Image (cartoon, rainbow, N blue to C red; front, side, top):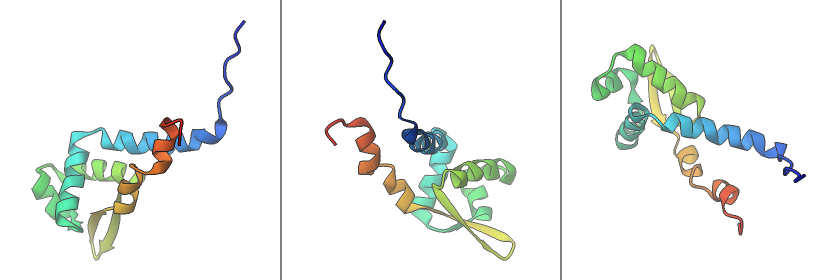
Length: 106
């Protein structure tokens, strides 16, 4: 009987983190939001509603997923929320840390 390899539980948290990020990126509307934030920088939610052409309630749903994945950041100014891309986190997705999970020679 062949023994199964032991799962490295220390990697579970890393896998969970990246799974959430890539799940957040797997939606075309969220990619569109991120693209707009890349082009425009910090943007008021009121402007995003018009730029993306969806009701604020649906937009808020997508923004929350991106916020939870730490792919965007929010700053509140008065009653409005301003969103911007979390460039450090987005750049981190292509980091050597992620590559080392899949490249044996790393």
